[in-house]
Image (tube, rainbow, N blue to C red; front, top):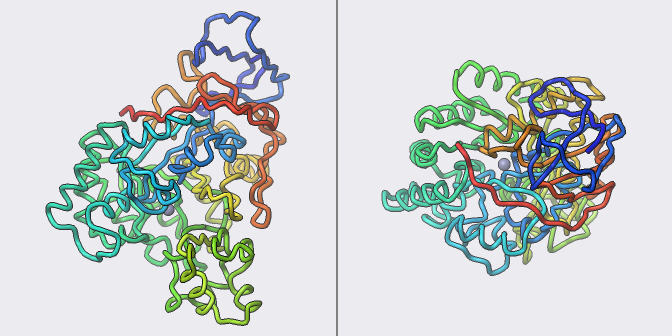
Length: 475
Ligand SMILES: [Zn+2]
């Protein structure tokens, strides 16, 4: 690649130069001119491929192997198995549900399944607490595991770590993870820690009790002896706005190895059945939420819950009952507008804050626009728009910081010998175009994306190549 402005991933100032690739790696050696030559015109930025550290792409690697919604953003690697839901060991819930009939006992089995068809970007797995708790204890049991069940769960964590997982994840607002007490979390995080793994957590509360939840996460890390990664850091609900700063202060004061991620939107999204029941739903919740996917009633997708109830002439409780009770209704995904823009900016400023889309790859519905827009939106809103951080710093958060935390060895930097995962973009033009009403739109300003030395995105077109690898954690 000729005439690029190189953002090397470390946060160092841009330098003008060429980047050569040979055999899937970046090289300082001279490369013959008979190979593909890309000319960056002295205006385009060449950076390490972005790493989406918070995804639910476990099933997407099989369902959507082109991974177009990530590749088009410049993402060359994703961390999977977040929020306590991993694609292995099956049978699990959530993501694994959509891989019809598939079963595999462990990460090696999942690896064989995804590698069979190939996929376009790299992936680094975490093993999910909810998934192993379903396997060991069941989905409905609101109790502590027996000693034998806990031992089974620990075995799953050890096995996943031996087979290349980066760590152990929790989703403590979801069933069945929310029934786990602190001791269970420490025991399982400890199993990951023995292999140098990370504890990644969707915390027990992201609203009124955010600080208690942070304290719990820090305690798990301290007692288990492992680094903590806090997922989609936020303060939900207007009375809690501003607590993002308090939470970061608490984390900084702890003196522990803690990193975080966030996505640049004021709305969250997840399985509706995990948030409300016909008994608990309120008018306020209905006012703030819209349907993303609704398999039994696709006509509701993209519409506000309260408005749908009014149009149908039923109460919001009646609507929730109708939707969740219909065949396929439990798979309904909602989007809730609960956060403040000021808290997003507070997140952006923090030096250990990575970017994680948290996108839910359900393309039959109208997913949260974060699935298609997260990474370009950081440049559009917080590098150019609000000028909160420099371009080089944004790239660092998306590359070397993430690669070092999640053990993506030899990635996240433009350096001699590194794997050739690269994105080339126009720093003046890169922007998201996905919206809450029209969310499946690819961003603008990304010119080329290269994964393991192969071109997967060329001026707005996916090349169809699938050079991705399921990576193994390097501590
Ligand atoms: Zn989550």
